[in-house]
Image (cartoon, helix red, strand yellow):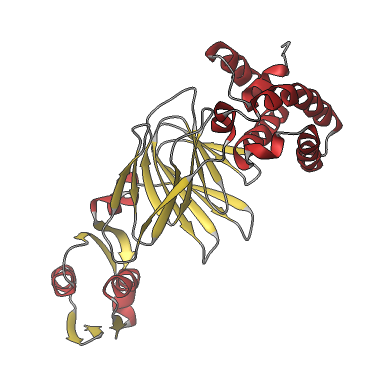
Length: 321
């Protein structure tokens, strides 16, 4: 494919026509090298203030820093050509409000749901919906960039993404990144264990490493867990309804031990639950519990499902046969 690298310079200043943007996207998809070059262009465009580029010296300095990261002679030559062309355009825009508006850094808002709060539903500017779980936060740009939609997540969230073949959505975590075109999925980050669980409900997502390299594509019904300590991915088939039931303010326990259940209840109600029988602790349950139910009501349900007794003494709960 014969490609005019000056289009990348025009991309930096936001001057591409829809037809030219299509050419850039086709070039970008040709190879991993092209994808990495374009990723660096994205960072170059949105990360630094426009005033850093309004002299040739500063353009050269920014270019040198960029190519130090790339460390590839061929890419270095590409960027040198692109930036020489871009320098002319950028200098023309240096004192222009329009130029600043194209290159100003993105502004973000952070939505946080505190522990103990209800699930919060967020509707993004593109029509996508996000359900954010208690103890989680989502970083969202005030306006999406022209070339992608990018969010940053800590905690757990469920996404229903508006489809856009030309404008993917990226969800960034501390350990993996996720590329989405239009789909529904759930992401859970665990800082203590340093892992990320991704569950795909429908559509298709691609998991990327922290360097934005593609790792694997997921299929509906799969859960992929990335363990940062071991640097490994494990895949399993799951019931997606169970994995995403929390967004309906429900606890869904599917073949789960009583020990696992009381651990979650202890956190939710800030109590210490004592299991006085190893046999009971290993007993498995299948049940759905609404999060707005009280602890006594939940204990009554468990008592109905299994031969247990319980008593509540302030912050201490005792469960026994």
